[in-house]
Each structure stands twice: as C-alpha cells, then as structure tokens.
Image 1: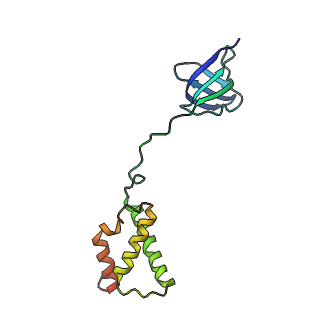
Image 2 (image 1 turned 135 degrees about the vertical axis):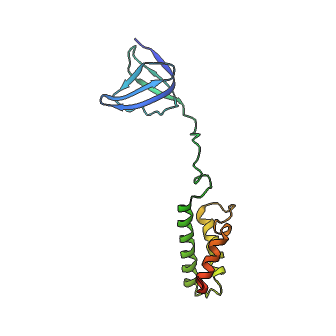
Image 3 (image 1 turned 90 degrees about the horizontal axis):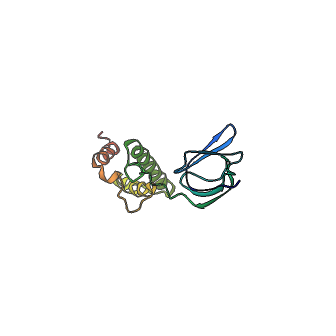
Length: 150
C-alpha cells in the first residue's frame, strides 16, 4: 500500500534504528535506516508504505535561510575583550610595519594613526570608524607612555 506524505520537515533525528523524522501537521514519526538528507524546514515528499517508513524521499523545496538575530559583536558592536585584542594586534602590526620599512616614527600619534587603519581593516568593515579613534583617553595614555610621563 502506498501513502504519499508531503509537507515541511518539523524535525530530523538520529536514533538507534537509523533516522526519525516528523512532518508539520502530522503527529506520526517516520523512520529510515538511512539518512533522509533533509533538514528542518525543507519541503519533502515521500512514500510511507502505509506505515511509518520513509521511502523515495525527495526534497521539493529547501528550508528558508536562518533569520537568527546576530549578536551585537557580530553585528558590528565590539565587546571590551575583542576591542582589546584588535587594538593590541593593530599596534603590534603597525610597529612591525614601521620597523620593516625602516621608518622612524616621529610621534606616537603616527603609530596610532597607522594602527587605526589596521584596526578598521581587521574589523572587516572599511565603512566603520576605528574603535581606537573614539577612545581619546587610551590614545592619550599611549602618548604619555611613549613620552615617559606615564
């Protein structure tokens, strides 16, 4: 007996018998010894053989892209730890660049400006202003440290 099941996948699990799957609007679990090669949200069609088997499954429509909200850091925000890591990397690389180019930095502000450019590049968004540029207090502390007055 042939029973065609069509619908959106509600869940796919691996169990001790193989794989289990539920389709939206159908309370029955369907089973297969093999991976059904579909994901939650996919539109599928298959023959249940009048029981709870998955036979001849075809994906008729892929699941829509995930709409999970990005975390603030991923969306362009910067937590303090990430900011510290990026700044440290930017200043180290700015200094290494100046040494490699045999460039004598006249003032720490030159190094900070180069670090800001590296920071923006590292953050991956050239439209974004460097976090360093918005933190004048830290820039002043670096200048004081370089001048030996810190």
